[in-house]
Image (cartoon, rainbow, N blue to C red; front, side):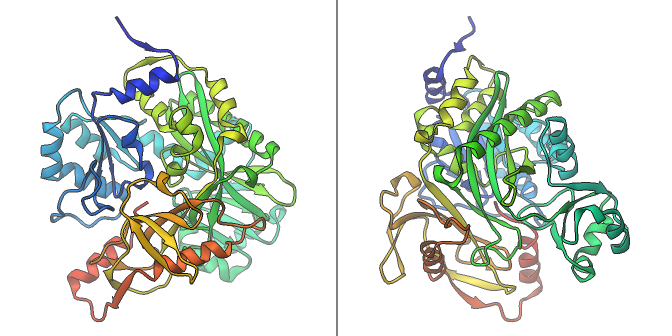
Length: 487
């Protein structure tokens, strides 16, 4: 007889007793940190061990010779081909493992097929179609969701750009189809600005050209299920802060704080996300996704920013929030969709409960990057765990820990180290993620002094030496890792 999960208690019990291995392949454990506490048999298969062997559920095989990495997909495919990982997958007892990925491609799909891993996401081809900012704009239009006033067009020259965008004003924003954290978003005031991105724009078959507005970014994660789209909390986004990232317009953190938005904004975003999810369902997508919104501060209009058809850098915030611990993390509903289990859910009731301000606690995260155009070898780096900010502006290590929930005081934070001793600093390198209680920005969306003190205090624990004359092997290694982001 088929077992049907009828409520959230059944869902939690199902994963507590889970006998099917769930393997998260990625550069680090960051995006789904803590999920192993909810799902029995959940393991992180990572290129980097952020906890130096102290996390019981991280599998990080020793590095072996490999082709140069140019993406997270390359890292995941390297892991799937690593002998130690292959041996582990084949030794796992129980049912066919479920494979979880932040990023994957057709090669990943083939390797999973060879290893007997069931990849629990829509196809790479479908995800790529949705990830395309041009395609996402059209999906949003079908769902009745506005974008910033724009055109979609092939751009051949600066003169042509100006001739077809007169109605959009003098200041423009151009986005190419793919790219993240500000890498392929270009701000154009004049021909000199256009010259800086000319090759990227002209080579693209089509770009999105928008009016530049006075806006703030926000993010909302959701999950398309057979019973409807479950929507998480609306989060502010930290974007482009020079203290954190070298990329103008680059994502560098989030806040989940109820007072960041008025009730009307939260309700509108929630409705738009749900509509977008139902539109995704029509084209065959199911599971986890995230919408970025742009709120026009002059008109209070809410526009589509972009869509990420996957778990994201904000997922750690969504899945560790108070409502998630009261019910279940959003990612568990994604797993349900791909686990072959029959279940019933009142999605409307879940969404109503999750939108209640009483169920939204105040947490924030900052992604700290190397912000200068320099190459340095890291000789010392702070450990992952609990840190305390002292009155003199320095920070000291309190204890090893694998979970942010143990941050109980306002002057403490959880640090997840990404860059290790022996790694290299290069422009845009991810040093680590700092998670703490409360807000990081003030009402004008400027970094609070507390945030700046934390950034400086953690940077002070990284020690480097100048690269000097790099040999050809080291130069190639630095160039390789500089081509992609770990997160």
